[in-house]
Image (cartoon, rainbow, N blue to C red; front, top):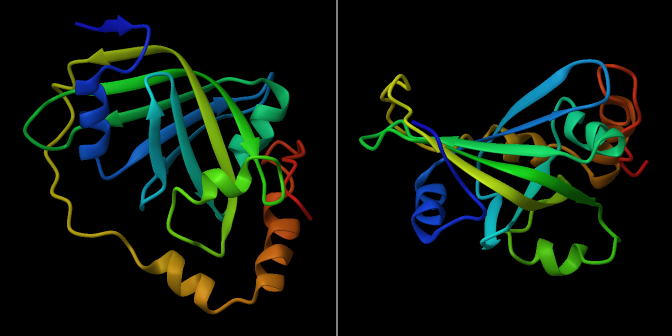
Length: 180
């Protein structure tokens, strides 16, 4: 049975720390809804109503484009191990790029990564837990090194060119605000 909370409790924060991946969900006023899996060492809980996560270069940039249209975001974690649970945080988010006020302070919370495209600062207005009884058991093996290999083969200019070519618009043609 689902339960709602006004903020993350200590047990929720521990649950988040124990997960190897999370999902982000956003949608614009019209067009497609986006749900993206995220991993690596890219998320920090900064308080009971605040989470930040560093978004690395990817094949799309839907989250940024959606937030420019409607400022709402849901993050979700689910356990693939012994404790069945799904946890969602609902709220809004602020998108920061390199050079924006606050970027340096938040980026300092994460390992340095040349393909860091945005940092999302998520303000939580509700937390929900649910059972997760139908989530399968899965075993974590390791993080992928594919992103790092891709970055190692690119110059900073190559990465910026990729953003212009592949990340400046959503799949629905809306701007994402990525620096070009």
